[in-house]
Amino acid sequence: MSRYTYLITGANRGIGFEIARQLLAEGSHDVIAVVRSIGTAGPIKALVDENENSKIVEFDVTDRLSIKGAVKALKAKGVSKVDVLINNAGVTHEQVPIEALEDSEFERILRTNVVGPNAVISEFLPLLQQGTRKIVVNISSGLGSISMNSGYTSGGYNVSKAALNMLTKQYAVEKASSGFTFIALDPGWVQTDMGGKGAPLSANESVSAIVATLSKLTTKDNGKYMNRFGKTLPF
Ligand code: NDP
Image (cartoon, rainbow, N blue to C red; front, side, top):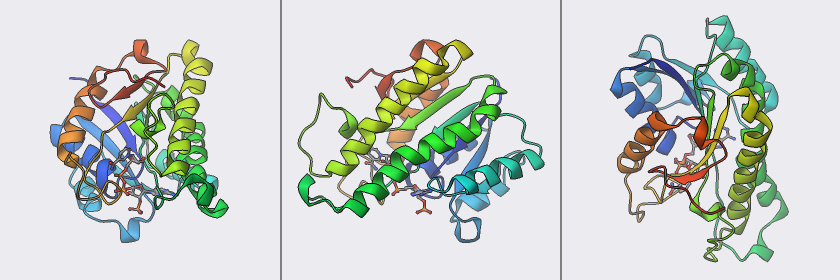
């Protein structure tokens, strides 16, 4: 099996932590785990420390300068490529009818879930260009499907994930000729701080399927919106 470097945002907890954990458990990949603050990071720090070629780095996806700083710090540590970028960091908001969503709250969601992933992709493109797989997976949601909208009242979040889907497609079209693969992936409803205890899937279950799907992605998947098993979803 080839050895690849995966960069995962939001690796401090939830789905991002579990992706890092499972990839490292396979023993055949290197992980660059992104947290907001290394000083206050949870078990991800010890996990990375146990794996010689893996690294922990800090940035906030809403702060372009901090992303630039992280790229610089990684290069200084000898990182010369990223094979797979997983844009997983995300936030949601209290359920309210869409007309009651505060502007500041809507802006926070869009900034973290859409502007942030774009800034991360943009700053890491040169390292991705040096990678073998050139894959970007944007962790979306079934709630980002316009055609499947169920009326779930986290409207600002739904809008942000629909926009993330379009961001994915935009990159897919613009970068197809450079050998990149851009995917929007719905992890399912998962027991995390965001998904809550009532979610049907454990992080382990969701991420086992995601990790299996990641290993199979090829340039033929560029521009797809898919579930954790790799099945295409309608935009
Ligand atoms: P959690 O709330 O458990 O974890 C979110 C992670 O994102 C945390 O590590 C958090 O960092 C990080 N994060 C939040 N804001 C920023 C920021 N500005 N900069 C950097 N990192 C940030 O969420 P999940 O693990 O459940 O969700 C992961 C992804 O999966 C999200 O994109 C979410 O929308 C998506 N998703 C989740 C579903 C679910 O059921 N759980 C369903 C569908 C999609 P910190 O620890 O520092 O707060």
